[in-house]
Length: 284
Length: 299
Image 1: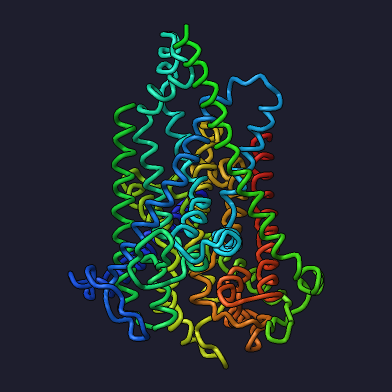
Image 2: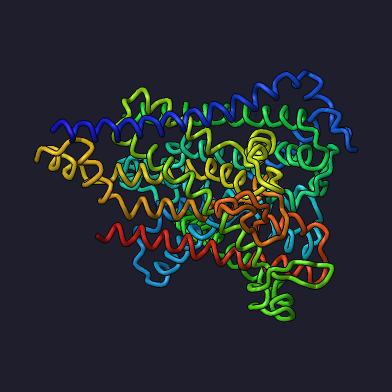
């Protein structure tokens, strides 16, 4: 028994260690970026645009604007499609007796799973071939958002599906019993009840757009100027970090921009967690 | 009555619209495949599929488009990431699901969530500034710090959350009765974990690792930043075979990203061909993960 207990103690020690290492890695990466990056952040850093050239001078104003545009435009494309798909899959697909449509639903599920596994550089390549070149949209916010939408559609579908599934079945039954049809039930009863869950999905997708670099590297052009329309090119904050580190080797500015990015991601994560825990306390 | 017809009309219209949005993903996947394939066809035709896959020389100026060096680069960096990342991820998954007290899990879980959220460009930057100088201190001729080792470490951290989350889920879905039965028979907690719970969760854990592999193969920006991007077949630079990880390399993803902006003609087509190879590789990996998951559900 002693030997068995000793084995257990050793094993558990190792597991405690791996858990601690995971936390330490996070602490070290985030801490390092913050410590090196925060000193370079002043009010000017947010209000001036990069000056271009090889010095890496200037702030990140234009990259904040571009990031904001990218989030909004991508979500405008992806949200209706993603939420629509999720509604069909959770609210409609269960009671279909038509075999052909059943087949379509399983094809749709396969498509979504496949799309979720496509690496982002392939979306970039696709966006470059179709939107930038074939459709003549050039390196622009429009091209990049369309390519970016492909990345986040599966995310929105998955989170919306989860949100819809967590709405109690009784809500639907009550509404249907009162004579409302499926769509009226979905629109007036189920969707409002699932709104918080859906909004976390949208926030999560916004986070993906903020973090994404590969797609925009090949579709957004990389101009450091403030975009003035959907057809302007630009660079998001993440892309700016890449250019600063790889082309101008301005590591101090890159660190500061990275610190802003990480802070933004932390805030988004906290918001998502707050919303999610509110949902569970409400239902629990 | 008319309002009734209108309501049924809306219901029918919405049903169709929603079905179409559900099918949009299929359409996108098809479009992606068709467009990359179409652009890649000239390269496949003129250079030859086998020639591309088996040739290690990539010199666009010389019309030489072999991608074997990049396949090796992607493969080795993924292997390195798996060797470093999987033990850590699985340990964390077991720790979170079976061992950690609630409040500790409340620290570890958000940390992993944050690791998953950190943009890959930030990992790349961290790699350039912290890991590359560290690797450079290893004494070996021609070791510049940039290369497979630094890239593998970065990638290991990046796939940790994917593998840890899915494995934790797999471990948690093992029926409680298994655990209770084992404990009731007098097994210790560790014996229960190692001989009952982990074997039962094995299919889920394996598919978690395979999905992590898929993520690793697809990573682009962080890899460009730390791997050195030289198109060479990685070789050991000292007598120690492990020194192969000190070699510079280029990944399939990096090959596309670095060159696409200025490539034209057959060169551009060869980059799309690189994309097709990557796409098929990842489909195979993800497909086998899905297959394993289904097998697990059946048994």
